[in-house]
Length: 184
Image (tube, rainbow, N blue to C red):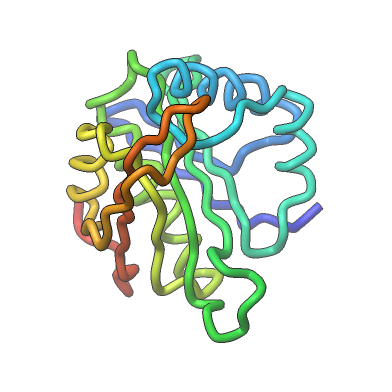
């Protein structure tokens, strides 16, 4: 198992706690969050069982991370970050990430905290200067969310996502990671 930095953040004003995913505690909630987002057609991720999530979290590479958010005693969402093109030594500064938040916690700052307190500090720690990924084109809420973090749409891909035989469009988004944390 890769050694993780002890990044743990808590905001007393909004009650959102961010930490690295624990392979014993978090696979079930992460798996359920993916299922919910898939039912809403909000993610290109496959569904994974809790055991598959546990296996992934336990065997992440040294530059991969999954962060979880909790509000009160409940799971609210998660973000992941990994090398975007691990097979190219000229693109080691590029990461690929994403965020998934349960519907009842959207619009409460969960995703923003996952990025500001988890993903972006991790990117700086492991040397990711650029982050990019795809978002389903119809998912305007996610596109707006990522734009609020500083991402921009850098491409539109027609019929990129095969959703059970239906071809759906996706936008590609990117951001250059700020060298320092922006004030909140």
